[in-house]
Image (tube, rainbow over all chains, first blue to last red; front, top):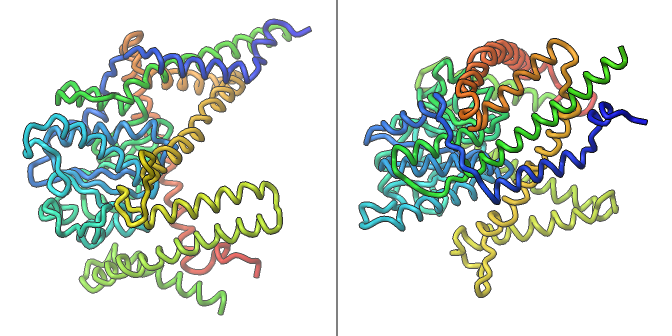
Length: 289
Length: 219
C-alpha cells in the first residue's frame, strides 16, 4: 500500500492540469488588481521615450507572432499610447510576417482610443502625419541595415500600399539619424539582430520587449548600455502600463495588468506543487534511511 | 560543378559580406548597399516561392501516397489557398477587388488573422504552461546542493516576477533583478564569448569550404 508521502510525490498530472486551469481562469473572471512597481529597466525605457526630441521619432518593431501575443501585445499597445500621448512621431515595422496583423491591431486599437477622445484634427492621431506603418520586408538584414541609409528606399510602399516618400511624416524620417530609439518587441532573437547590425553600424538606440523566459538573455546588453531599457514578460508590460497611466493620464484597457492576477495565482500554484513534491521526497528519503 | 559552384559562391559572398564592415571606402559601401538592397531581396523573393512550392509538393505527395495523417494535408492546402487568395485580392481593409463581406459577415485577411491565427497560436503556446507546471512538480527536487540553489533561485524569480511580492516582501523584486543583473549577466557573458568564437570558427570553415555539411549528400 502506498504511503501518504509517496502519494505526495505521485500526484496525477491531470490534477495538476485541472488546478492550474482553475487558478488561471478564476482570476480572469474575478480579477484582483495588483499594482505593479516599475523596475529600473522599464523605467529607463519609459523615461527615454518620454524625452524624445521633437525632430526624432520612435520606431516600434513588432517582431512577435500570435503564440506570444498574450505576453507581448500589451507592450506594443502601451508604447503606442505613451508615444501618442506625448505627441511623438511613430514608425512601425515588422520582422515577423505574422506580426503584421498584430501591429495593425495595436495601431487600430490605440488610434481609435485617441481619436474617440479628440476634440479637433490637431488632437487626432492621423496616419501619415503622426505615424507610419512600413510593413514587412524580407530578409531581415535588408531592412535592419538599409534603414540606416534610407528608410523610404527599403520600404518604397507602406503596409497600405501608399508610396512612403509621399507621406508627410517621411519628410522628417529619413534614416536612423532621425530615430531616437527603436524598440523591438519579440519572442525571438530579433532584438539581438538590431543590436548587432543597427546599433553597431549606425549607433541607433535599441529598446527591447521580450518574453519572460528570454529576458535573462538581454541583461548583458542592458548592463553594457547597448539596450537602453526593456520590458520583460507580462510583468514588464504591466509596469509600462502603470507608468503610462500614472504619468500620462492615459486610461485604457490594461491587458497585462489584468492578467497579472492570473499569473500570480499560477506561479503560486506551481510553487505549492513543488513544495508538496519535495515534502514527499524528503519524507520518503528519511524513511528509507 | 555541383559542388564547386556553391562553394565558390559562398566564398565570394562570405568575403563580400564581411569586407564592408572593415573597409569604409565608398566603392565597398556602395557595392554592399546594392548587394543588400537588390540582390538579397531578389534571393529572398525566390526563397518564398521555393518555400511555398516545397510545402505544396510535400503535402500533395502525402495525400497521393496516403501517408500518415494525410487528411490534415487537405486542411493545410485549402487554408493556404483560401488565405492566399483573400490576402492577395481582398486587400488589407477589405478594399481589394475581391468582395470579403457577405452582409455583416467579414472574412477579410485581418479578420481571418485575428479570429483564427491568433487564437490558434495563443492556444499552442498556452499549453506549455501545463507541461511546465507538471514538469516542475516532477523534476524540481532538492536532491543536491546545486539543485537546491536552482530551486531557491527559481522561487525567487517566480515570486519576483509577480506584483504580489511587492506586498509580501517589498525587497524581493529588487533581489530578483539583482540575480538577473549580476550572476546571470556574468554567466551569459561567458557563454556569449564561447558561442561567438564558435560561430566565427564555423563561419570561417563554411566560407573556406572546410565544412561542407550544408551542401547535403555524402560525396
